[in-house]
Length: 199
Image (cartoon, rainbow, N blue to C red; front, side, top):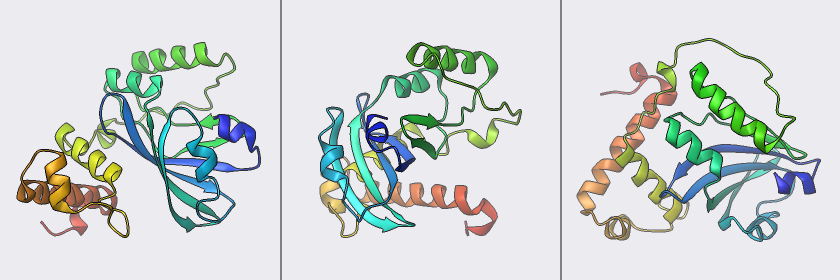
């Protein structure tokens, strides 16, 4: 948010987030304007940011993978067992995001946000089943995916080998390979629909 207040014309979208552990997470960001890597040095200077990787130029902006300390709102979501909805959009110091929660859980999140910013507003409330928002990965799979993302396993070129990743998570190479294949299949099914991906 401080970054978007400093650059009010820029649009920023948080595309996803994976928690590496209780304190640190990794997210992919899209930032409008500028060539790839234009904002990496400035982003790296913020105290909560641990690592910034410039990935690619896409759609009038650039993709960045950012490893940072998890903000308190992420811990609150985790405590309530709620899914974070993406993308989250920011511009000029304002953030807009969708909350998927039951009424009592929404009230806890809204009260927290109100303490941080008294001007927070609800734009709309929609009622729909929560089943489609349930996490598709187990906590073990999510932890492996987060670690693989943070270590650069899915980067091009790859930042770490499967063998080295397996050593770092203290598992066998074959176990990690099978788990990553399962994770990729689940993620593809969630995007394409289970009927489009062969069993």
